[in-house]
Length: 225
Image (tube, rainbow, N blue to C red; front, side, top):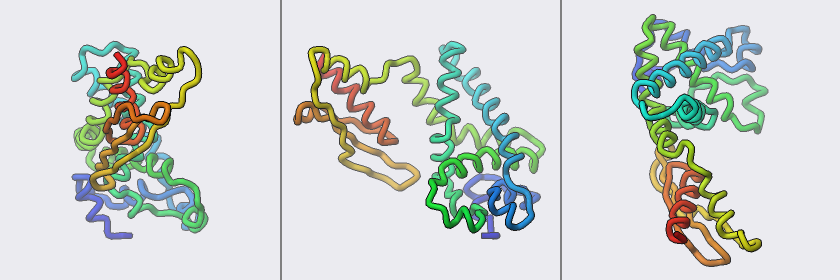
């Protein structure tokens, strides 16, 4: 656990004070049991840095988006699900300091892992004394989510649109199935099919099950004209 060299390689940053990285990975349960600091204060700072860098990135690179659209794209890029994906990509769960009570818990660790992303952003900033290092880590990890969201911002939910179109004259059975998963855990590609009244109408692919289902619905709408 104490050998964090592998994680530093994942982050692309070498800490001068490794204790900052340890604190960024320390959950309150472990901190309480071992009388050390948790990541909570770092998370507070990291949240602000993340929001600022994402806002700046959108402002400089997506000049066609309105203020409202940028707000929606940013919300998507820095939401818990997106941060959890970043934590999974870099295997943060292998380095977490959790207390005995939390280790034994069956609760989903998604929120904890999302919090550690923000804490690590702050730890990099404090350790380096230069926001450029945190900025690089943030942009490297959110740019795909920003790009995806920017292309779909303002669009109507395709699944809802398909449902409205098909059920205009009454209830019709619409089901979505994930029919394949390809790639490593940190870079999965899902394929989903949409079944209408027992017949396959279309299939789509995406980086998450939700995105794959949405793409299947979009293609189904195209087929229906």
